[in-house]
Length: 286
Image 1 (cartoon, one colour):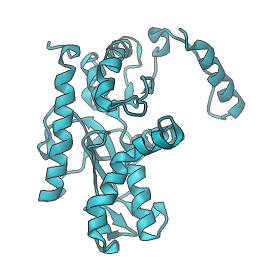
Image 2: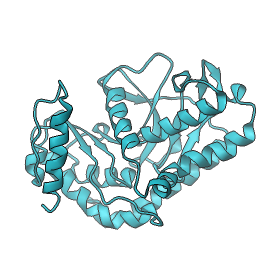
Image 3: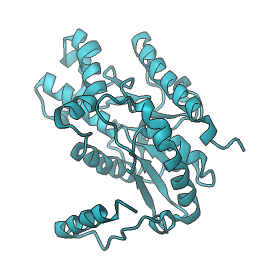
């Protein structure tokens, strides 16, 4: 309720953009009204991370919000609803909402890691001296956090392996990974607030990628409910390489994972397990 006046300002800005596909906006603080008949639910609302705050600090603050949202989506949304969780910690917030709306199939739930993918592509492109559009097949494994693993081993630059185009493998294994992992914190330090425009852009990218066929030979990174693929524990919401025909998606199978990559993946999956265990009381057991 206290945010409704500010929400009114957002509505005015949306009106002023004169988007040809925007037919109307319903500002509300009522979850049942807000999720009524929606086909896509974009859950961007959460207490933002501030300087010096770890993502784990947000778990208990935001977790209860996503119980109510999950229940309201199950009760009110369209039968074909798909849900993208953006508010952080988005993987575990998605896990909480999904487990409180078990009438909605697990393959309809997503958490955003496209921002990390875009950051990784940008760093690889800058290092190689090419346009970002030249970078494909980037994978973000695990959590949307500082433990995520931006996998450069399968990335391609103008169709060639990134490890061939970029000869500085120490940079790839060191500065590249840490820059992508810490980019959110760097932005908070620089502007005093968390990512806004780049995150909003990544939301649009995610929905577009899930609703249009994936280009031949490429994939995109999305956090989905694990089915046990690549040894990642079933039920955890983790980043995977995904392909879609615009309707149904699937995890890309058969990618090689070397010892270095496996170590990084294990670290981020262990964090996801810790987060899950920390919010166990928010996850229905039946």
